[in-house]
Length: 90
Image 1: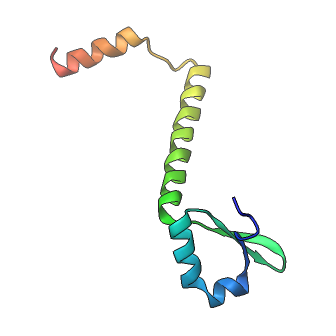
Image 2: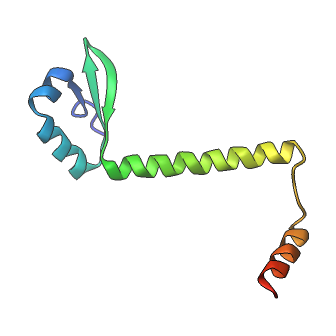
């Protein structure tokens, strides 16, 4: 990651927004936008954004599963397969 290239001030974004969008789309690296010398936003391409959202959803499902296990909300594998077989008429 070339961090020095990936940090831009908000004035740069205002004057060269289409260039930034093109760059992010091509190299798939996020660009950090600063305001008054502090990081304020991150510009990423849509594919990376969608992949991050999917990854977060998977992590959320895993966390919910772990909470179910801790709370004792579990079903034996054999029972689940029997129910599925019955529903599918196998």
